Image 1 (cartoon, rainbow, N blue to C red):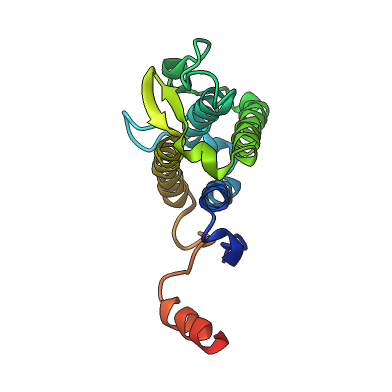
Image 2 (cartoon, rainbow, N blue to C red; image 1 turned 90 degrees about the vertical axis):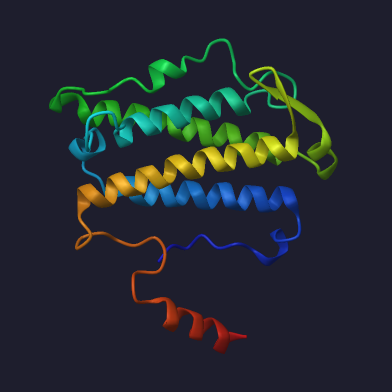
Amino acid sequence: MNSVRFAEDSLLDPIASARAVFARQRAFAEHALDQLSDQQFFTVLAPGLNSAAVLVRHMAGNMLSRWSAFLTTDGEKPTRDRDAELAPLCPPEQEQARVRAQLMQQWQQGWETLFDAIEGLTEADLLRTVTIRTVKHSVALALARQLDHYAFHIGQLNIIARALVGTDRWEWFTLPPGGTKAFNAALRNRS
């Protein structure tokens, strides 16, 4: 089971809480991505769906756009090309490891940009206004919007990865099926 836990001191601090949920979502995604071979990383399960690689590229592009100069510029930067992020990606087999490494570097940069932006926020900032595609949002709503967006795609990543790896070989991030009662009992006994 994963090692990303919510610290009790972050539960009442909205910015620390957001940071903790983003960190957990990132860990959830990377746990799934780490189980994929390079070939699986680029595999499309069915026509019209995205590969894990495309989702990584899209999320990285979104993070770099949304979180760069978060409080002072529109979250949809003129340099972003969302359509290109979501275009199919099928490098030749001999290029897959290199392309994957490049995408994961962009992923890392996106997360660093996100956490740098959140790190500088204060509780007073939560009521400030930012824009995303010219639409005004409170900072609190912008945080919630991005958590929602990333959780959706990270769920997709996990479904893709589990389908490709196979349930019998899947390493669970959360409690494996059948483990809930024992886990809850251990938590109750710890109190």
